[in-house]
Length: 476
Image 1 (cartoon, helix red, strand yellow):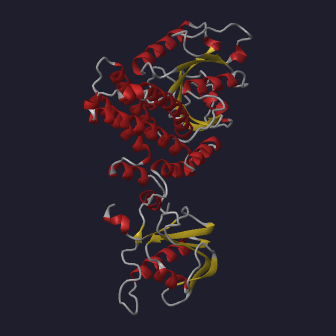
Image 2 (image 1 turned 90 degrees about the vertical axis):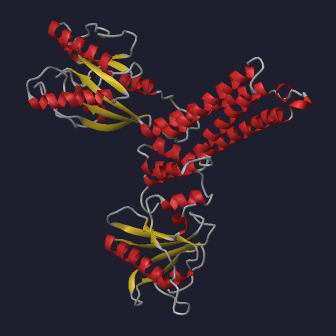
Image 3 (image 1 turned 180 degrees about the vertical axis):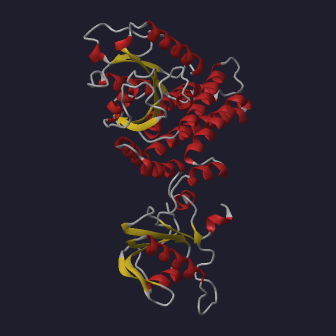
């Protein structure tokens, strides 16, 4: 641990602003003197006590509930004091200042500070202490932040499942199976003179195959969890007056973007996050794509292309009411060529044929580009066909309907699992080769175990921990 991990810390644990209740939280070792200074009495462990919180002159700052959790039976694993006061910013700042003052005040008998080194906590430092003191692992720590930040009910439930250890249990199970397989390989390396084929008799190939199958299942659920957490960025693109703003409004169920018959109404992006079956989709309406002499509109079109380049999926909007206009068809073809140049082939493009209500049932074309890509015909005005578009968006996102046992996951978890998969495949190739190089096999298994352990924090760098916990709220 770094030296700062031993300092006692204090912070306001509730969100900024006014509220009915606000909490000031202290964590450290040996809080007895601080408790006496603020509360004027000894507190019973894990029992709420209503009392005045006192300043240095013994005057009440506020009255509220005090709770004391002696370590290691606390959130951080250290002694924890929570002061629940009225939620006014001034009151909470006074309590915070009083804690720092009391911690630095010399004891009348010993002359030493009541709680030397007490300082304001850094973002996420309470949860970091919980991780460092083995109260939770790294995946659970991240689940706490994800539960706080959850934007959908499905994401909140999945984060809660991860917080209770469901994801960590899967990782530990994989790790244990991997350790057992490594033991067999190491035994073969350590005792070659015995001429006993440990690997064949122990069915190492079967164990590795089963491990890969289990990993594939975990990876699938982790991808779904990452999708619940991150969502996907969907950009609506097309010519002016194709109905892009109307489509955004229809998907969002609100009048977010201005809709007029005047071409070029949208000059800058308009963004809204919606959810479909609990999956967050970040929908972005952009300026109509065309050649323009208007300087402001040209800036908007340039920004539109920037958004398209960073999209996870693109809705290429076509106007059915103008499908027979040669000029319009040519402009759509120009956009199609530009999309092919600017977008990687891995980014899905969905052809959306809008204004179905204006076609009177006339058959619509399938699209100017690849006929194998998804296409949908709809009316943003009436809502006809929107459900079909929602289904396609979930499909291109990779969402499985009604998934079971999903736990929240992050991009780093998925990347780590992909690394494990790659190492296990290398190990399988070595095992199947004639005269396998057992030292290389053992190394691939070791690297796979390290990648797994990075998920739960058993094998991780201080830099990684700094990035993760710095994204937390102060006081959490």
